[in-house]
Image (cartoon, rainbow over all chains, first blue to last red; front, side, top):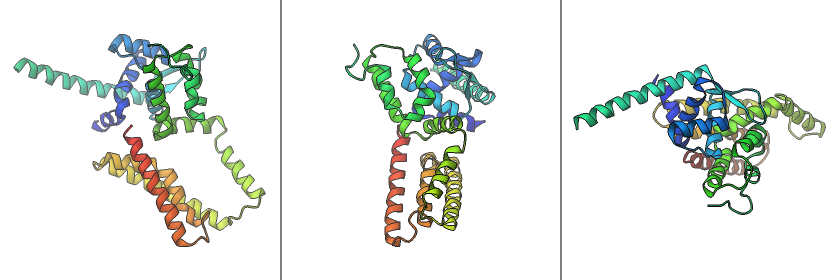
Length: 108
Length: 176
């Protein structure tokens, strides 16, 4: 499963925004504006439209998210099955890192 | 900070993006960015996004697939071939077929080599090779059809320098 994690890290400066964008529609389809609001509420980061669509294009090209029919000029995006697996693995990986970090802080 | 004068609205800045990108994301981009003037930070974000849309292979691939799909698949390519045939192209059928074969073979080779290098621990080299897979193979195929009959030195200089330029641009793109 290491390769999937590498793929998300391989998005360069878009890897962190991409993680947030994968998390946002995990509970149901969302359009880009709703994603920015959700991401800001969850992480405190406000993604600009340039970064947002740079990440969306990459995730769509990798078939990790897919667009649904446009509703009032806005197109909702849904997490694909592949996207779910990538996200699940990435979150597991982050949890392991956090656990180690917390343990070392407790030791120190 | 108030917006920058001139191209300070999303409608103005979206023009910096490639046409195929605008066709795919333009409308929802404008709906997301909203009307009115943008802060400098957002202007910079959008300009960097436009540079990325021009240079990034992945961003271009996402919009290219959409453009081909909305234009009716291979219809544009078929039209080009028909126009070429009608206007009395100087390319021979044999030369064109060899050129196409070389192009397909080289695209496959560049892509496979890119994947192998990426997995072998050279991600930048792998990304560069994957980026130039199509334009690079077009260059490599040129001596078999477009440049057929030209002196070999001319062919070597044009193909070599074009490939070097492609590699340099792709390398710069990996740094964005």
